[in-house]
Amino acid sequence: MDNALPEDESLRIPPIQNLGVTMKQIEYPDNLVLGRVPKAGGSWRPCSAVWMVAMMLLVGAGHNARSDDAGQDTGSPTSGTLPAGFAYDPQMEEGPHPDSDFEWWYHFGFLKRKGAAEYEYSFVSSFQRNKAGRYLFYNLADLNSGEKSHHAVVDRALLGLTPAAERPGLLQRLAHRLQDSLPLLPEGHTFLPPSNLPPASCPSELRLQYGENRLEKDGDAYKAVYRNSDFVLELTMRAVAPPMPMLGTGLTGLDKPEDQYYYSYPRMSATGVLQRGEEQWQVEGDLWYDHQWGKVVSRVPKTWGWWGLRLDDGRNLAVFFLRDGRTGAIVQKGLTLHHPDGRTQVDRDVQFKPLRYWNSPHARRYALQWQIEARGMNMTIHVRPHSDDHELPVLLYGRIWEGPCLAEIVVPGQPTVQASGFQELIGETDER
Image: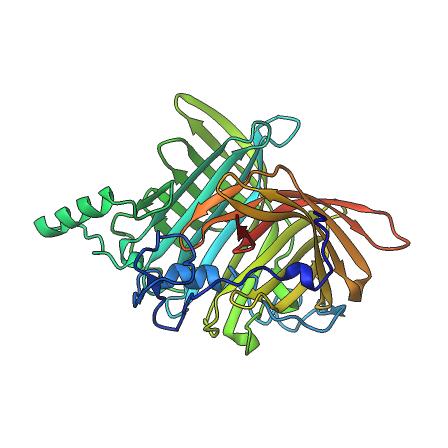
């Protein structure tokens, strides 16, 4: 079978069947295994249980952005003290926005033991929240052996369960024991204890505590702690390049630009400590940081592909497609090119062509190698995974593909530029 499909038809997969999403509930069949998209033929009952997770994943995990005109340069200096291109000051928006329908703080990147010649680990994490509760997943992968350590924590309330309390009564303790004994969560997931962290005093204050995991802003440094039964990772991260306004302004709403806000720090230095058992290492590396929040305006479930790339020449690139999960039709797509001085260019005339597929051990099939053409910039991007097996368990979708990738950026008449980053495929699979 030829894996290379025509440009437009190559992005059509069998639609997700019978996933009824409204602004107040998500429905699922009685026989649904949590984390799997339901198939046709189930009997339906209402449940607000996985609304927060559904919205975080279905709206495009930050990549459902609205594109500007092809090739438009939106990076001219702005008045006042706003970073180039931005419609707002990202430094004043670092913390939680309690009234937003969804929000997350996402990191990916590469780490090595201090002094090592090459990167030894990839790492990805996503702190998520909405009005119902919190969800965090993170994954540390050995780039040489392929071994992955995946962990996630989730508020009980997100699954329609009795929420945790600091001093639970007898009935609540019994309910929690029953919940803990049932196969409610994907592998690597556990329930969160109650939060004893006081709410942030203002949106500029970033201070998240998800069980024993933490993310906070201290001066110009972001500090994170990830603690589980397998490892403890402590990181201090600092931006070494200007912030990147996604789609040129950092306003990325589907209907109205101001419905959603999305910015990145694509280049952050990282230092810290990795401990596994009795062994402990000083580590260093480079990470990419995303923050998005806003309104959910679409009632239709979405799937998407997203790539965040750091080019060897100092530029950064984010490109995505977002599609209707029921019909398979692309509803949004775009590319943001970020220059070292903070300028951005945006191209919405982007075509995606999958070149090679991988069959996962969990009976799913992912397109892992792509040819992406940004026609307004006359740019072709060739993307391939660092390794094929980077399927991760998550709520709602059951499994996604998210992991490191390598790329080549080709523009006629210019030298080919190498790049590395992360590839994210959410719902972009057909089950075998």
